[in-house]
Image (cartoon, rainbow, N blue to C red; front, side, top):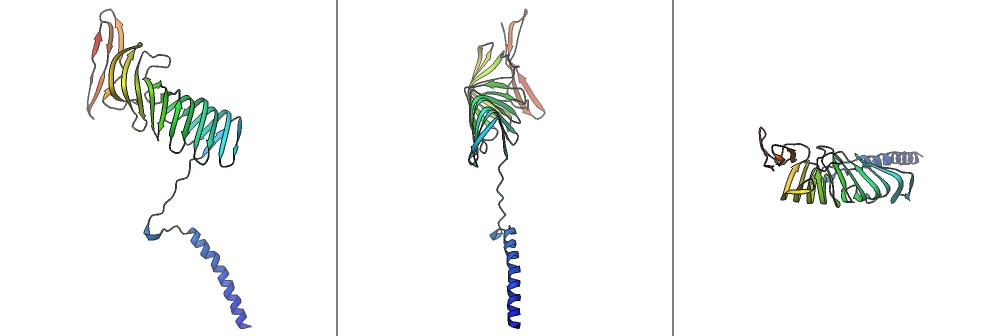
Length: 250
């Protein structure tokens, strides 16, 4: 009888220890060989609103009618959109508008991966929130976080509806991290007339100190006739700068 008692006591103790051992193994996060633990970042939550939403669980969602997608600080609106949950790809069309921290992009059709921020936008129009630069192009290519490139683009700081001057470029790259634009095969156009060509220029669109071209200054008076200046800013040192402005007077 004493032997049976000790056997039962042993089994009871074993049953009590096993769950604690399993729990300890489950909570232990100390890696082997002294390596630091690796924590995988979680996906940013995606929230979709629309007049009508259909789809397949954990596969794809289709939203139609005033569709709105929230992803981090970005808000995407359109007539229709598809979101693929596994790959984080989006397919969007109709009155596309992408509102971001530093700019607003509009177009006809968008394909964008929310994770890699790669894709394209057709018939793009863009507005910089710093410096009020704006423009359009034939195609916009997203090339990762904070970077995109426009084909057959133009850029101006004139108010909406006024394109008194603008630059026309075969290719325009926007770096939102450094707030810099880089244009290739560029024409400076005033009142629909090209007045200057350059194979390459770069400029700060936010007003930060940086060597480069400034907006042309144009006017007309009886003494000089048609008068235009093309200022170029030189950021020589933190406490020294200069502006050189070739001037044409008719």
